[in-house]
Length: 397
Image 1: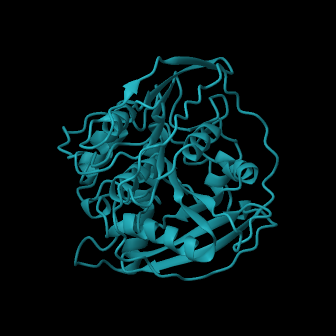
Image 2 (image 1 turned 60 degrees about the vertical axis):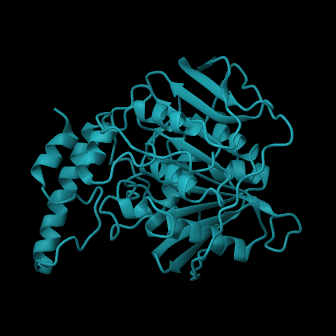
C-alpha cells in the first residue's frame, strides 16, 4: 500500500507535511486544534516510517555542541537583487574522482555555532551560522558560504551532526549556515517546495533564504562569487528552486535525494512527484542561467524515487541560449564499503565539469556517508558531504 496515497485520500485539506497553517477562514477551538494536530502528525509519521523515513531517529534537543555560543539577532531581507549572467570559466578544472570514496572519520568541529533570526518582507526564519576557527568577520579574503537545508522532521543541529559538514568547513575555511523550518510554517518542518509562492523569486521561502545570505554577508566577509546551497529531500528540492530563482546569488547547487524545479504545485502533486508519478512539467529553461549542480540519489529510495534525481540532471544539462553545450563524460564506477555507485559528469568545451550525478545502488532515503549521530544517514555509502563541498568549491560565479 502506498502510504502517501492513503494520506492524500484521508485528508482533503493539505497535510501538515506540506501545508502551512491558516488555510481556511474558519478557526476551530484551541483544544480541537491540539487534538487534530496530534492525530494528523501521528498518521504522517507512520506514513513516513512506512515510506523509509525513520521519524524516530531524531537528535535530541540537547544535541547542540556545548562549546557553541548561542545568540539571537534580527536582520532585514535584501531588496532588488539584480540578475547577472555568470561569466564562463576561464580554465578547465577537470577533477576525476578516485575509484573509491570511503567515508573517513573526521575530527570534531572546532568552530562556533551562533543562532540568528532573519526577518524580512517575505517572512521570518531562524538559522544557525557555523564559523570555522580563525575565520574572523573582518578577514581580508572573503570566505565561501554554504547554505545547508535540512529534510523533513530535522533541525539544524541534527543535520549538522549527520552530515559532518562543519568538520569539512574547518578544513576548507567555509562558513556554513543551517536555516530552520518551523512547525508553524510546515507541520513536519519540510521546506514548502511544492507551492507556487515558494517557487518564485522575491516571495516565500526563496526570498527568505536569499535574505539569510544577505544577512551573513553583512556580518562577515563573504566571497559573493562563491555562495552555495545544498540540501536533503525537501531541502534538496528547495536548493534546486534557489538555483533557479536566484542564480545571481548561488554559484552551485547540491541536491541529495531531491526533486526538480516545479515538480508539483499542490499537495496531491507533491505525493505523486515523490513516487515518480508526477505530471509532465512545462518548465521554461531558456530564460534561466545554468547553475552548476551535483545530484546524489539512492536507486532504492522509496520516499523520493530516483527518477527525480535524473530529472534534476536533465534540467541542469539542458541547452540554453548563450550557454556552451555540455557533453557527458564516461561514467565511473565507485566501490564503497561493499556498495556500488555510478558517477557521471557533464563538462563544457573547456573541460570544466558543471554537472555531476551520483547514483548509489540499493541506497535509500538517507544522507550517504553520514554520521549516525544525525537522523536519515547511511554510513555505508560514498561521502556525500565531501563530494558536494568539493564540487561546490570548484565553482564560482
